[in-house]
Image (tube, rainbow, N blue to C red; front, side, top):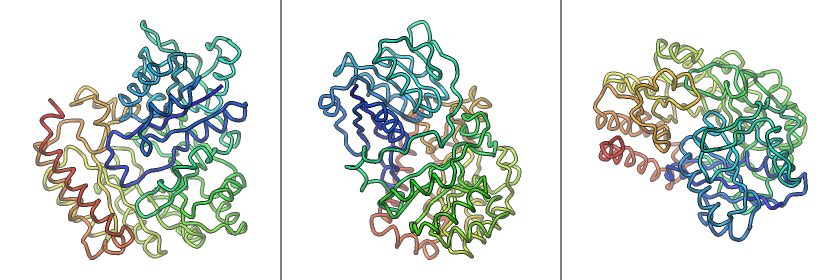
Length: 453
């Protein structure tokens, strides 16, 4: 069978100029399908916008589309176009949002929704379609119907070492475009899935049933050896949870003579408890750690079940600075912030002497405890607004003032003299990009009444 896999275009194209990661999930799916002899084509619509042309050229038997919450309407539109151009093709949707809210894809243009890990589900679906067998015995499916979806038995998440190596030849024509800030070109690798934390704003730990799944270190090294790019992003939900495994992985990478620049996620409490592990990783190429700081108040951190303290944040910042690894600090701005909170956050970032910090709006994503707790207060359920830039519950400040304060955080929380080394890495393009981001926030101020009307 001929399979067309589609990475949808973004709801906020400006963010594609900040980072653009390879569609690793589709590369996994493609690898699995090719094991069974199927012909696979992948189009990354963030880069190649001609989806119609790809459908016409491929004449697919199956179209597979992935997406996050902000992609819901985009996925539906792509599915509609696929059905118009290839009426006989089966349209299958998977990904994060399909897993937490499959019912949102109960539309005529979509034939199947995959819930959870999709590699083996898709292989079984393709086999059933090829042989003309019914699909109800396949675990992890939701089948759209006018009267409501039919869901098959749940599928447990596959052990990661049982998955095929993602087929990066499927993105060969795009690979020079994948990056994150100054890491370009950038490859992605998954070494674990899930998280040991229980933050109420995150669905990732719940999706795996609370399990932290991990690959054997030897398997990770074998895949790393096949990656051409010198920059590698560990797209784990949380890379350093299993510190013993990561210590062994560092040793094996060094023994294999693999030298790359690494970018991964880690919690502040892990950094504080295992500074020697991060120092070891720094020696083998760890350049940057994404750290979800989230807030500067112990009370609010406890309320979101983050499981860390402000004191640990401060210590983690010092540790990474001491070993020469840049902290990519991320804060979530609570819609309940007043002007005094914005000022206090700005002062806190300056106190930590951070060289780089980003600020998003605390967003109640579907599938999270936070969403359940505020669903009766949501200002909108428009999927495109779930982009971490919009306030989706009422703000204490008037919305124009709230967005003005957000813009000021980006403009002044990190002094220019401290961020200069980062801006030099960014280059002129990066400096102009940050200015455009400020402009985007201000534009949202002017348009807020249209977006929420």
